[in-house]
Image (cartoon, rainbow, N blue to C red; front, side):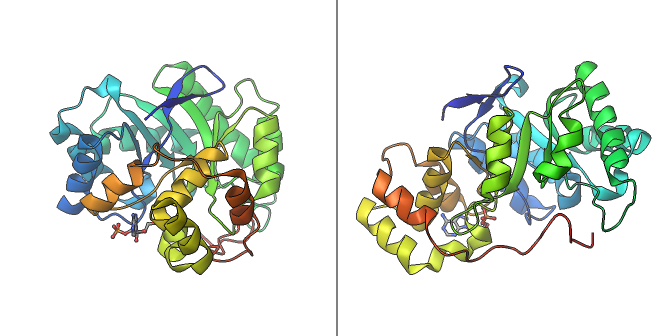
Length: 278
Ligand code: A2P
């Protein structure tokens, strides 16, 4: 797997191992170990996934050198604001049993549905992220589920976000957000690149996949990469973990890329950052 470069020059491996909905148990310890054994060097977790201890254990048992791994976590919605974010970060480090993170993200923006001063809250959280970054405890910082109107205030601060992790898969491309990020040098990462599995039975994707002798999962992951969006496929099944990393021996042609782009908006999670109630 190759690396991509963030806007601060830090390198990030171009596929990440996703762990949303992976349990805090041996299942995740073994999943992380299987991922590292077959070549993943990028692991994505979050405090809200409640599996950081298992992820950390998997990293430790894999025997990989810390410097060869890229680890991401996220600050949860109840921990917004300066002091709480600093404390949440320390708890995450301790749960993962690491002494720095490669990437730390604000998991969801505060939005106007819940807060009159939503912009100020996001800026305070960002100020904490920036201080942790400047102290060298995080190599890169960013956000998740931010739309352009959430990002605007952050773009005027001293350190701009390096990453925005959003829902992105065939049928749900969030064009406006992706365009904004691209214009502002923010790398887009895809959560649920397989639509949490919903893509896998789509007949159009199945037909395209058979044409390349690949699985629908591999098509979705390759399609993200060809859009310069960094996919974070989740699986706890060793054979699928490996399958999801085998996407570098083929290329989706321009016509099929367009065909996938044109798929009707299907299979979105429905989690709109301005509407969610968590
Ligand atoms: P499991 O973890 O049981 O292997 P997403 O990354 O979009 O959130 O999708 C994750 C879901 O897709 C999980 O239910 C995972 O199941 C399943 N999955 C991941 N990779 C594959 C694959 N290559 N083939 C079939 N299902 C997959």
